[in-house]
Image (spheres, rainbow, N blue to C red):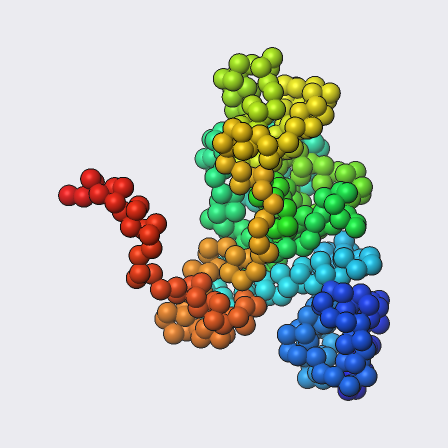
Length: 406
């Protein structure tokens, strides 16, 4: 069977129209038709994306390998049944994440880092509660997790870095808006996958604000801790998710894990107590915990520090205006200024291993770029940027601490 015939057969098996495929790849529909008639040949990069969309191996499309439909991923695919347009792009990104995990596992094994493949596939024994859906247990379990990892009650300055340190591979990519009323359809905020070799991995949609991304990390961490036996979870922001017991539990766990009730109540008392609560105070609290303003309001409501009517009233205040007026750092509340691509998709642990392997001559920049799905020049600039020339910022920073010199 020729390439064009395999392309058409694979697309039809995946129940996708040419229009949906074109939209996902960002090409005209006619181009997909040309590929299937043999009038044009897709590039290698396009071929890989087509294989991801059709859930087959690239080698099958070119007639070099038998069909491998990657049935092991069905636990996630069931949540990604294609709806018109948007979901095909999401599925393409999800498959890119899963392909990277497979490639990363192969690389670690071949490079002699097999010991790193024993990533977490179930929680530490003191935290293993089995499958949990009871929202009423979320507060206590969140406190147990903080205690186990010696996190106290303080805010977590970088939840992604913490997860990386305990062996959870965090992968970031843009999946489009998922906020109700700001997208054509409900979308995906993140995902958890218990990879058979890499262990726990979390996918985060970087189209959301930084505060919402932090919440997604905590939400998926809950799935890892208490729903790992499911194999994986796609977290959607739709009506089904709002009624799904495991998602409701994960939301409650994330809220308590990021904003411990004991510390929240102490801070409210510091600011004058419940009677002094107002939108500016709530924004300061959100900034302190590094969460979104909306999420902090829900925590205040959950701790019965404000009423439902007050939460609605507080929600009518402009965060942007308050941030400017109060001179509060706006990072948790800002929408991202650029799309996630390149090295910022990967955690520090991945990039550090890649950098060392290139330096030791065990991996070429071209091989590394192929594994990470990046341009070789961009990868080298990111990992080995020249740092000899001091900038004006560097000179000023050194001058500010000149008095510390011996």
